[in-house]
Every structure is written in C-alpha cells, then in structure tokens.
Amino acid sequence: MNKPEPDLMERVVSLCKRRGFIFQASEIYGGLGSCYDYGPLGVELKRNVKEAWWAAMVTSRRDVVGLDSAILQSPKVWEASGHLSGFSDPMVDCRECKARFRADDLEGRVCPNRRFKKRPATECRDAGFFTEPRQFNLMFKTFMGPVEDSASIVYLRPETAQGIFTNFLNVQGSSRLKPPFGIAQIGKSFRNEITPGNFVFRMREFEQMEMEFFVPPAEDEKWYEYWVAERLRWYVDLGVDPEKLRLRPHGEDELAHYSAGCTDVEYLFPFGWSELEGIARRTDYDLKRHSEASGTRLVFWDEETKERYTPYVVEPAAGVDRAAMTFLVDAFEEQELGVDKKGRPDTRTVLHFHPRIAPITVAVFPLVKRDGMPERADEIEADLRAEGFRTFYDEKGAIGRRYRRQDEIGTPWCVTVDGRTLEDGTVTLRDRDSMEQERLPATELSARLREALRNWSRPPD
Ligand code: GAP
Image 1: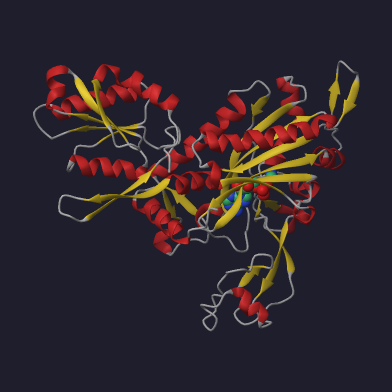
Image 2 (image 1 turned 30 degrees about the vertical axis):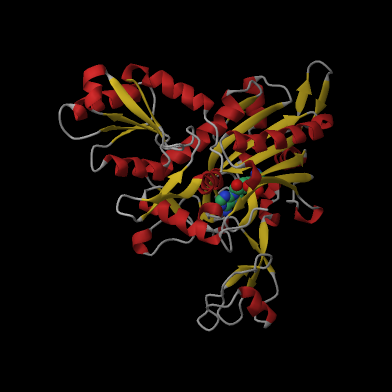
C-alpha cells in the first residue's frame, strides 16, 4: 500500500520556487495567505493542463461547447443557487488566542498561539479551548459602484458553474444543441477558506475547469458513470501513476447542498489521499432554482417528442492548481545514480512529466561555445520553435550540468550539436527518462519528436 510522504511536499515546494514554477503571492511583503503566483515555468505548466483539459472536454467532441462567463454576477444568482445561505463551513475559535479553524478539519492543525504554538489544534479542543461551531460563509464580498452600502454588495464567484446555468438558454439556443450536451468553462473562483493550506491544494483564489453536461432525466445515471470513468482516465493518460489514483463515492452526509450523488477522483498526495476532482449529479436543482428565481424558464423543448423538460446535470469539476500540483508531485523523483567522478554520491532530480504537460518540450545545446556550434544550435532551435515545439536554448556550463537542469524542470528531450554535426549534419537526442542518447540527422528531429510525443509512456518505477 502506498504511504504518504510528508518530506516530499517540502522538496517539491522548494523546487517550484528555485526553478520558477510557483511563488508565494506578495512574498516581499511577507506573503498573502494562500494566494500564489505562477512563474515562467508554472504558467506554461498550467497552460498545458488547461489545454489538455479543453482538448479532452471540448475540441475533441461534438457534444460540448465552451463559455467564459463573468466573475461578478448579480447577487440574485447566489441567492437562487443556495450559495448565500448554504455555502459555508463550520468554524470554531480558540478561546485563548482567537485563531480560527474549520471544526471538521482540526486534525494535525497547529494552534498559532504562543502558549500552544507546537500543540496540534485537536489537543486544544480536548482542553476545551474552542467555541461552539458557527457557520462561516466562504464567499468573498465587494462593492459595485461608488457607494459602499448593503445594496451594492456583489460576490466573487465561488464556482464557475453558475455562469453556465444562467446562460443555459443563450448557449443552447445559439448552438442549437440538444441534450445530451455540455457547456465547459475554465476560470478563476474565490473562496474565503478558513484553513487553507498544503501549498496550492487549497487556495483562496484558484482556477477551476468545470463542465455541466445536460441530459434527459432518465439518462442521468448512465452519463454519471461515463464521466466518472472518463475523468479518471484523463489523469492516467497524462502519465499520473494509476496506483496513486482512486475513486471515492461520497457518503450521504458529505454531499453538497445541490448534489444527489458525487464521486471524487482522489490522489495520494504527500499528505494523504485527497480530492483532485469531483463528479456530481446536480439533478435539475440549479436550472429549476434559477427558473423560479428569475421567472425565465430554463427548460428544453424537444421538437421530436413535443415535450418540454428540465434537463438533469452531471458535472465533472476539476481544479487547475490541484491538477498542476498532482502532475508536479507525481512526476518528482530523486534518483541515486551511484557515484560521480570524484567519488561523491550522484543524485539527479527529475520531473517525469508527460511531454504534453512539460513546460519545455526540447532544449538545444551546442556542446561547446565555439567552432560554429552555437550558430548551428541556434538555427536548429529556431526551426523547432517554428514547427510549434516549446524550446529552450542553453550554451552555458558543462553539458552534463545542462542536462541535469533540464531534467529538474521535466524537459523530455535535449538535442546537442557537436563537432560531428558540422561534418555530417547529425545531432544527439537525449531522452530524459532513460538518459539514453541516439544520433540522427537534424533534419529528422521534428518527425522523431512528434513520434516520441505520440508514443510516450510513463517510465517504470
Ligand atoms: N461546481 C462544483 C464545485 O465547485 P468543488 O468540489 O467545490 O465543486 C471543484 O470544487 C474542484 O475545484 C475541486 O475538486 C478542486 O480541484 C478545486 N478546488 C475547490 N476549492 C479549491 C481551493 N480552495 N483551492 C484550490 N482548488 C480548489
């Protein structure tokens, strides 16, 4: 059985900062709680995650279209959806130091009070230091327009889904789609989480990838099963270790206020099994609530059967940041490679990213910085870039070190131009996972890389 590895998280977080994947937001001012900035490699990683999701959920299918709705919506949306009254977590305060915790998530939390600094919050609870649980609404509030009064309060969306429901008629009518069909959206959501943490796992500002799939009510179960299987497969196809993924159906007591059933895709993070994505049966709850509250009937009129009905909804809802973190953690390895030339232990840090997820696909190096090698390497890199590959050029330092720097950020292939290249036009192509090198004509690189991208599979453990 796989076991959680707490140190692994620290090593991944440190790599993320060192190599420019993820930084603490407002770091020079001491940071802002659970908000993060993505650096040059992090944005590419995140873009690749979103592109892979969009390709799987929208562009490779006929039955799903996209949407990009506003973050600010009428407060009536949140009243109708039930978020104003029901989107809350139970919160307790430490009576001594006033620190706040989620009542259902006290295990292992450390009370920040000086007296109880190193004491897990659960011990404080045993000592009776906590208030009775109170409900705390997770939505961020702000004001719209120049007057800051209760009439001008608006909320930052806590999920992207509601923008899809309120646009049901606009999208269905303009796209002329008939259930079963889906509307997908990627965008920022905001939650004033009481106890955020575990790096980008639980943030206050994060990005979601959600798809609402509208079906005839009788087909709800079939499509639920279909989407649970599809979503699990997506992670496996992108190289995540299947042994560290599992499906967990929710118990009755865990279901969100709108849900008739939900299965989580969970990953074995260094801090234990946790939710990566949820696939929920939202029934006709949202369309009905918005129909009642707005007076606009959000229904489907079936021309063939001459019947009007409210579709049921199956919703796969994933987090971009959680997916990115999963790809990072899952890809991370520190390999012991024996000893180096000076007899010191040789360890290589490598991210075994799927090439579609890797921020850089191919790095090009001149073996040395003379004899026309940099010029030839520069041309090869420009050609590959023009072909659509994400490339990187590096001519600094020993070649072995350059390979290792690329291994550490997960670049699957490196191309080296050497003396022989100038004589016969061949280069070496080095594979990140096997560290093997092959020689081939530079003119064949692009076709060879495309083939390797198609055929890539996860290296054995
Ligand atoms: N529309 C349904 C919905 O929002 P959810 O389970 O609350 O369901 C869906 O959120 C996904 O969004 C989660 O599985 C997770 O990947 C991501 N997510 C939710 N809250 C998050 C947070 N505070 N930080 C990072 N990701 C979060």
